[in-house]
Length: 187
Image (cartoon, rainbow, N blue to C red; front, side, top):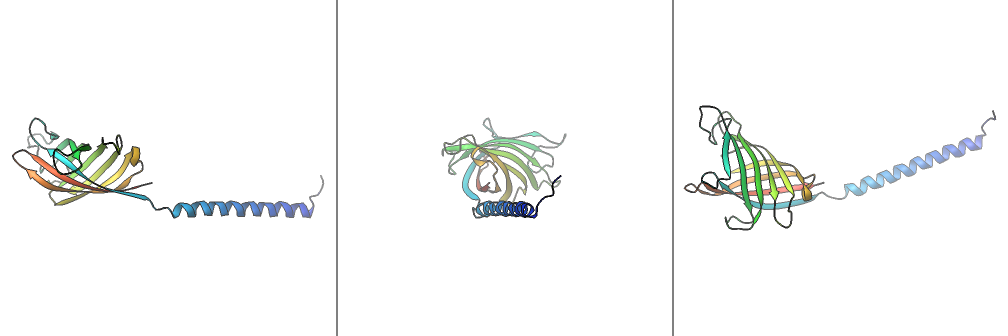
């Protein structure tokens, strides 16, 4: 076996160092260009048209504690919803989607509701895309906040928050209009 000459060892070592330096330089450039791109933020205001009674109810209780009234303030009551979502507060405003999911009265004293639902867009801009909303909030506070935990379609990898505020309540018609302010980041 022939001995390895010193110049060849030096050349191999120098090449390895240059290759490592070039690789690190490329990685640092890629990471720095990604860090300078701020995440895209989207803000929108939506209006949920909520009907809690009557033949066209969009929010109904489906389960609860046996022997207890199934109400918003009764612990353990489960509601399902399929609210119309409109562009403006007016009930005849163009529909942009549906609010479909469940609410559970989750506090023993009935003060909190755990929400799990999707905003399913049907308008031209976001048709077929969804935002997934989840969290617990004090249901009788003026403003309730929930997390945006994901999305589909144009809202893949969405994260953010929503606030809900009841802006109108017609008790005889059991109709509420709930303003939903959405702030999300994509990517």
